[in-house]
Image (cartoon, rainbow, N blue to C red; front, side, top):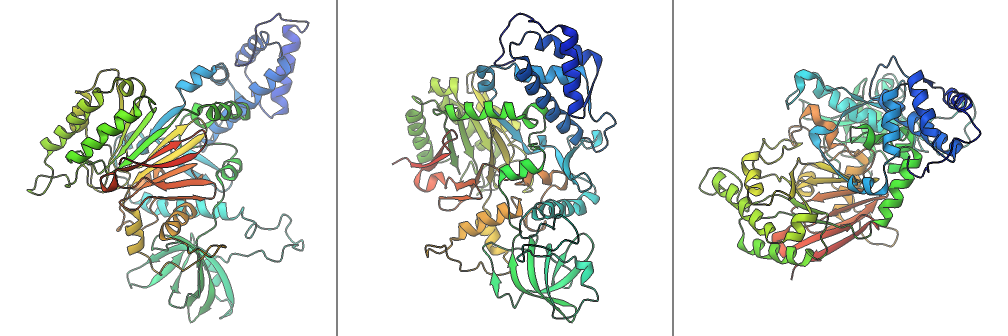
Length: 560
């Protein structure tokens, strides 16, 4: 185990050590199988600080067991520790710093992420097992379409109930000390209430067949009138958003006076509320991290001061000028050998297709072959860098439905055929996630600013910061996405989404870094302890972003 040293068995014999192990499990409400207990005794017998090592092991086992049981909605063996769990925990804790450095960067595609649901009874999330019949398919049954919106609502509701303004009193019937608390009214409770009485509601903003707007929750719906909104908080409110509204019910219509998104919370608070699990990465070693492991990872993360991610968007491979600038970029980066290059589409100026004004398949394949030859000219990058390719809206692949599949192999193979075998490259989904030690980095390529702006049901408010500066349109966007905990809080007919993989579009817990690659001006905002930025369109002025995860620095760069 990391930090342990081989030593003599000391005065404590195996029987006494076994009793300590069993007592430690009982104090944590766990039971251990005999072979698992024997294995722990053998491990601890080689440790000089047995008490400390036992605590670290038991804490790690409990975290892993909780994560494992949380991934099963019904677990018969909850609390039972077997030899497999012990072996996995000991293997993880035995990794030295070099092992952890090699595993520091993990790339997760949208289709590899678990489907996560919230259990309101147990107040925890759990990952659903993948159905064998659904393996490799993108389309799901109609029931999942309704479940998609129910899960979005439930996720934001459980988060909202932890906010100081909305959290219920600790003891029912006791007088409340905080008079500023806001009480939510369920939509079904509006029936029979006194007219013109002010209520606060949470619901999904939707437009039904009569072209009027409605607010829906899990048990009811009510027609809303947005024409008299007097107070609109920061955000871009569209059909499909889950919103907080305040107003009065009059003649069966809820007259909205105030409109806002449910307030978000920091990543640390969400993870703490979920028992410490980071369920986006779908495997025990990446998700179940004990306090001891977390401290080690954070320490290594801060030491990685030389690590840098180079990110470009709209890398038009059919442009001679872009290729020339890529050569300059590679030449400047080779002495530094960045571990990661992220190239995001669109990868051609013309949309992919077979028409006269489109980029034909053979041309698209030739562009990636040429890029492979260019990268091969820089042996340092070939040896040390990992090239990641994220498709754009106009690139080949599946229909314009999110999550988008990777660029098909027939084109990506052209890159590999012109690279040395040692080169590392990955064609992944849009969106995708990168885990760097403890950081979660979300990559998303879409023209989201213009799409959200076109679909606003009310105009974004003219808000101002405390220093008098106006709130920018991109600030409205960033706050909306993080408050909604979703990359595309739009109706399905505007932004089609695979119902089965909607969890891949979620932003809960809030990621450490969110890259919104957009055909829009560069911007950077820090909202709710999350760094959000747009690298800009590379062909416009040959600008890109360098991100240094150790210091959380975002550097906007440009090739003159």
